[in-house]
Amino acid sequence: MKNKIPKWVTIILCIFAIWGIISGIIFFFSPQIIFQKIDLSPKGLSLILDLFAARQISIALIIGYALIKKSFPMIKLAVIAYLIMNIQDTLIGLIHNEKGLMIGAFVFCIILVLMLNSLSKIKHD
Figure (spheres, rainbow, N blue to C red):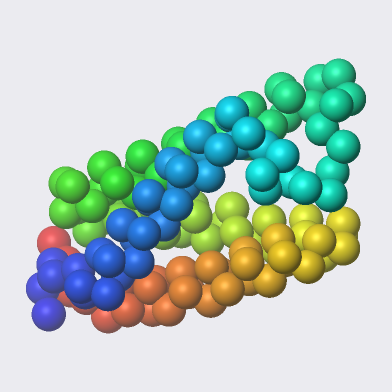
């Protein structure tokens, strides 16, 4: 295989990119939908939520751009960055006893590791 991104990787990354944009918009405009158990009223919390929303949208746009360009190195780098982000989210979920965050991020980690494994088997320029 030469420079051919597996179809399943492309499909899952498209889903991740769409999810990132949607979740980022939700974090900007209605974070209470996702963070139901957290008091969102303290001053300064909206800044942190906006930063989190920007992170989600940024990584989604990077993944989307890499897919549109069909650039193997960009896709691999985007997967690595997204994996690092989800490892951190898994640890944050563990530290704060947020099982949903921990499990969700861990599942994403597994998928991303499988993607990297699949991408590492591809010969590229």
